[in-house]
Image 1 (cartoon, rainbow, N blue to C red):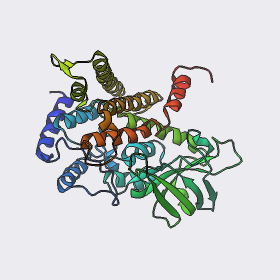
Image 2 (cartoon, one colour):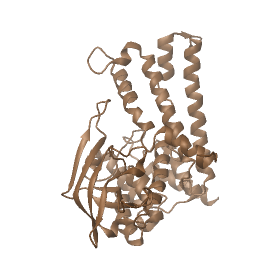
Image 3 (cartoon, rainbow, N blue to C red):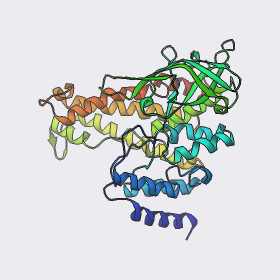
Image 4 (cartoon, rainbow, N blue to C red):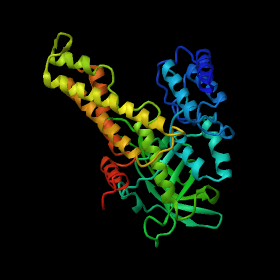
Length: 393
């Protein structure tokens, strides 16, 4: 028996022993920290079992709380989790964004101080990138960090900061040299969100939810020990983290997003009628089947890309293609779903509307943010044109 086969059998037995039946097939959105929604007792048991095994961050080195899995072993673990309907024990920006970035750019001290706390779920992270006047043109950011010897004083604001009201720490882009060309005067720093100079205000979106916030920084003290990379060279670190973010948004390597949610075909039959087990309308059938085929093709392409990568996790500029396609496909599917609900799809609240239709309408509205987060669709197309196709500016 090969090493992979032995690992598969061992992992399958371990999952059967440790996965609570109440958790199997259920989503879990635990992102760490103490400020968010508490886990159920069953989800907590699953989390603790995975943490003890290194499975909260399975590809990370063991000294930082991971299992040190590479290549086929990491892929086998994901496959066995999927087979059992086991939810990821831990998510969030600590796992998918700042953690991988610290593994590449962090000092030994920074890795030792921060990574184990991510793996254990002790802290939750948020991202300080966009500003009121620096969105798609991120490098025009103006949040300042003034050198004070052993620390910086940070002043400015960030916007669209996902989960800032639940976060313990933030990874943040600041301008340390206002006289340098805009891409060269930026630094990448970390600091705790409980600093007295940090103020967080949630933003209510068109969907009625408040996943985003605006953050205000007034003389926030940032230790130089938490400067990642070189001062004024943070743009390189920032771009790398964005590749990790785009990989996360697309679901690449971990069960791609954008697939058709259950009910689209059934709803099509109810709306258009049914003939011989099929949607009666040729146009409706073509639209829904097209979404289904494109979703399956996307998922298979994402899986192939992960398998072709030796580690299954190292991002490249190709993540822009996956991010673009996943979010646009998800938007397309939501638009089709709302359209199929007819007048039920324009409801906001009330007993006169189908509860599922109300949920889909809010998903449609909230999902529009996906084509902006991590860089808008237009930004992704520009990256593909320049970095992948080699087209001139």
